[in-house]
Image 1 (cartoon, rainbow, N blue to C red):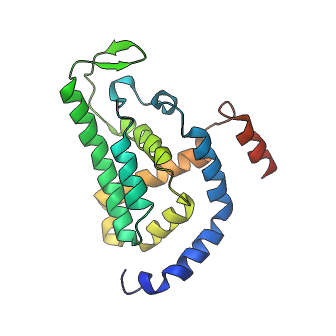
Image 2: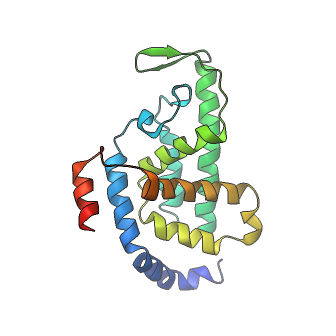
Length: 188
């Protein structure tokens, strides 16, 4: 990475930004429309909603993925953010093990955090992190990631990062969210 990526960084970045420009602009507008949506909008189960709005996870993504230079540091931040989700969920449950206080109701917390619960939380944090040019970034990470790391924890969480991005870009129906976004998407 140091021998290949660092000397070619500006050239690689230029081509990636150009290649993914339209998709990244669409993502920027979609994430802007989503940034103030509550956790419930992302279908995070009540028993796994965070009182902190997962701010520590979003911070890890924003600083480690969005602001670092080397792809290996960005990948490490994705793994760290994913682990922080599990850690924060467990920590908040240990403080209030029997209840959560969302929507004015008390909900018993008995369900453990599984993959179906993890991805909506990760999507929420992805949006809150406001990562610039996520499509270009994902292409860079998938290209530069050591193939040996793709089998295992790093590969799993990079796939989760890609799934979060793909869900926002392709699957999330925002027609009810923001009329301005609908106008933008129609004119694109």
